[in-house]
Length: 400
Length: 112
Image (tube, rainbow over all chains, first blue to last red; front, side, top):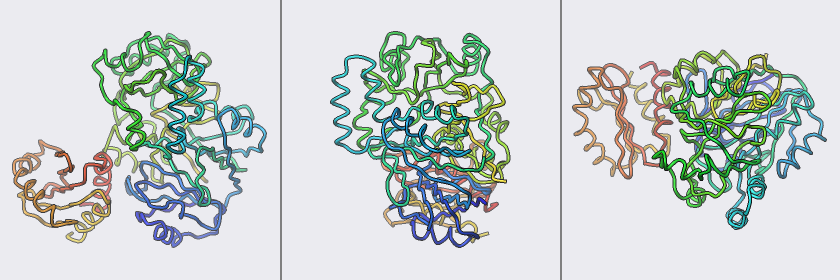
């Protein structure tokens, strides 16, 4: 059995009281999705495995809320495991562990533990001489979305990943808690023995059957698209058309941010941008986009491993042809939905009407990713049975 | 009806960044006002002096909503119905898009 409860209370003890009032069974697992600023979210605990995760917004059958707690509780047979280390270590650990039929991954996509770690990384980064070294440094703070899903795909299990990347990022952010303790830079796997009904989608047109066809589809879909050549390796991007990302954007009169150090230390790094690079996969001809900002960086980080993509890509402004109607076409009645938080930024209050179509509950968070059998030729399928994108993705869950 | 309007202002004011939430008739008459500190009265007075034309435009349905941004505050004027307008003033750290989403949800849930 799965149940969902919502409270607007932002004081954890009062929120727990509210949630417990309606609860009709003894859960084996509770996941608390917290929107808005809460003091001590680690106090959100029941007498079972309890996870607290920050999200950007909460969907209820009545509306969309930027504050409150949504509790997803279940008595289903579920285990919770924590995998700590860099992506390579974590992938090895997951491969050796027992994986259930359906897996919900919760982890910080980008995480710097503290100021000391940040300063050490900064020094290492300043000494970097080549792109391989830059990629290795980024691996210390980023869990690449596609790499993390591979062990699940290889063992033919379903995994839905919540790649937590809040809109306002700083050092030690996001804070995810398991049973009152911060998981820091780790991956939580909530593994269910039973298969949950999960449908994954994105709001792009279907991908093409060739590199050229996908590029053509993307060029027609996006705003002011231009073909570019990317110098990249692993998690690092060096240049677009042989220019640094900052200079490339400045040439197009795009100016957004200047001081990454100040933004990160003051929790003012904004995790969304209207400009990006749309890569095309050599394996499926699917595409994943990476938002770019004009920080002065010798190498720019990617949130997924770029080795599977062609060097030629599309630079464009974010745009959804058809606007909110396109979103309406893919939204369906579900018990629980996970929506890309960028939809909140794009559609503001218009999103409320759409969400009421769902009938159930859900969250706005950073672009979910997925591995499992996919019937449509989704644009976001960038490796066989692996769907990843840093925007415009949605997951629908049904518990019955 | 008045209870519903009070509920809207109260729920918006539960956000720490919101310092004023108020509902006006389209002719500028205040119906419900929730102010966290009397120091915000002067901002509200300034806003009222600026809004007469805007309220007229809203009444004629030619203006959907209006935002004012100062160094310290963000002000949103948002129509709730053909005759009521919501005014929300928050500190500049607030996310305007989030406030708009909350307001729209409250409007629909309370069926104003």
